[in-house]
Image (cartoon, rainbow, N blue to C red):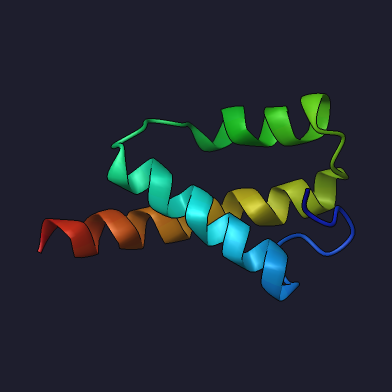
Length: 71
């Protein structure tokens, strides 16, 4: 379980976050940022500001990962 007050900044949380991102990219999953944001706040109970930060990271990191995978 990730720390809801720090997002993905703790090394253990960051590792799990990167594993999630890598899985999304490897499986070519199509998770919309808005769906991720809603899930984080409504289902997982994350504060909206931290969830919003994670959604921005998700968009940036999946775009970069998909670009690198296509090379």
